Image 1 (cartoon, rainbow over the protein chains, first blue to last red):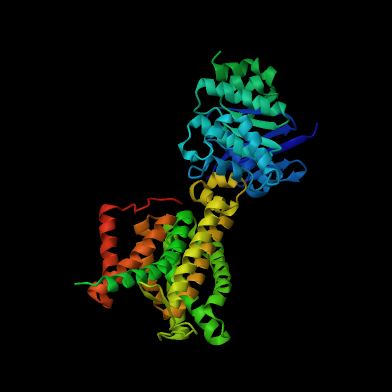
Image 2: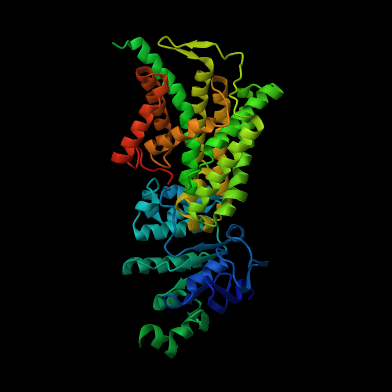
Amino acid sequence: MSALLSVQDLVAGYGPAPVLHGATLDVAAGEIVALLGSNGAGKSTFNNNVCGLYRAWAGRVSFGDDDITASDPARIVARGLIQVPEGRRVFPNLSVRENLLLGAYRRGHANRARNFEHVLETFPRLRERLAQAAGTLSGGEQQMLAIGRGLMAEPRLLILDEPSLGLSPLLVEEMFALIERLNKEGLAVLLVEQNVVQSLAIAHRAYVMENGRIVLSGQARTLADDPALRKAYLGM
Amino acid sequence: MLEFQILLPSIVNGLTLGAVYALVALGLTLIYGVLHIINFAHGSLLMAALYAAFFAHAGLGLDPYLAMPLLAAAFFVVGYALQRWVIGKASHGKDQNVLLVTLGISIAIENLALYLFRADTRTIETPISYEMLDLGIALVPYPRAIGFAAALGIAALLWWTIERTDLGRAIRAVAKERQGAKLVGIDVDHVFALSFGIGTAVLGAAACLLLPSFYVSPSVGNVFVLVAFTVVVLGGMGSFTGALVGGLAIGVTESVGGLFLGQQLGQLGIFVIFIALLLFRPTGLFGSRLA
């Protein structure tokens, strides 16, 4: 199986010291891959470099047949690698409708009306809020909007950064069910999470990141039974 | 006792003046709302546009109203380039740098104009310069009437662009959430430069509307930029409606103030309002829409 996203030996950071010390990861079409790790492990740095928000120091990122290591975010979005960032990053001063329309700014413009309907079917709650400013939505609704906005770009791979962060347990449950459903419809997902148990439950494969390095990887089912992982993240 | 017949024309006169103020202020408020920078070069760019309109008329025989689309396009390019390759590059993400850079640009443009054109005040005469439009309640010089209508038309076009188009949505998105904008594939630097370009394109248009009833000299920008800042603060920084309503209000204040206090002191009322506003309602009348 050839990889859709392939990241090799990614080294990146912000100041003088690197945060990532060579991370390697790949995602194949149709997969849910979980990237797990505690706060500060380097997961978001990983994402933001893959998506072109920062320039990686070393390593190689390829998506489909293209090398996107030095690409800017707009070009990466155009290829169909879409990130739903941590903290949602919806446009607070724009209405829900406008947020969704902007999701198709760079990609998916031709089918915008159809995808818009599809997103509203996926998130009926957003339909009731279409004219409302996104900044006035609840945290859960903003998360739905952020994912909906991502879906508007017809992603080939959706990176979800901490989608469960700040949601009530019930909503977290709903969120993971939704991710599973989107995947069943054919969408490849890179799920970046601290929530180890629920992530492993829906993922096919998983990577565990610690201090900027991938320390563990494998089939999600195998990892769920891994004694080291259970000890480190579940206290068992 | 003041006659109604004098007051009414004065208000109409103020509205025609205010519409152009509003237009200049719209450019300023757009740039502030999106880039969060106060463009000190706004006045001198308007001055440059007035000279461009003047020489298009004097040199090429181009009627200012016909030159309007041309000048708007040319100043769009100027503004885009300024932001993309000068202001944006020199700012290194620091607001105080932007202030200094735009101030520097304004000084450079103004002195260049002084050097090239000297301090002379120049005016043009168009076939309609002395024609009057009879509104029944007031006689309005044609250039003023056209300026008023065109200014409102341009404002409406601008509003439509900001509120109803993908570009407008992208501009508003970038104003508030740059990271999110990048992640939907918006080229943020490009949108910044577009916003600046639109803000200066408006100046190109405003210059063409002003010139037939006004004059041009190297310091003419100061006349407008101070008023435009007042308009922007009055309406609320970054507020579109605010700039429009504020511009009209300031125009009327100046005109009616001039009626009571004499032409020389007409602008006094503007700055009284300005100071009172800063004391009692610093967010302006319409809060903030873009920002």
